[in-house]
Amino acid sequence: MKANYGYMDGSGEFFITINTDLCIECTHRGCVGACPAGLFEIIVDDYDDEVAAIKEDERKKLKYDCSPCKPVSDRQPLPCVVACTPGAISHSW
Ligand code: SF4
Ligand code: SF4
View: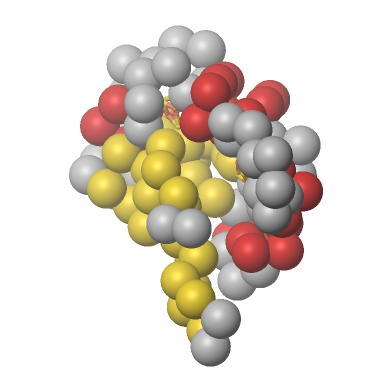
């Protein structure tokens, strides 16, 4: 399942999508430790699977939380995306 976390406002759309099907077999949970803002947590979803999610308190301010990882110039690969070797994480902006 693709779980979308985020929001849209006058300045754009700010969503992180997690393909939770890939989390089920993930043993290292790299997203949790890699994010300097601590946005990720492991939850038990509606199907009793342990999957990654964005913490509820952070979902309405992703643009600001992620801004240190997304400088206007010389942007490097995102730590969360790099750490997630199964390739479950994508960002809309
Ligand atoms: S590292 Fe990727 S696949 Fe593993 S739990 Fe985190 S989001 Fe899911
Ligand atoms: S871009 Fe940076 S702050 Fe945003 S989720 Fe990824 S690692 Fe965390």
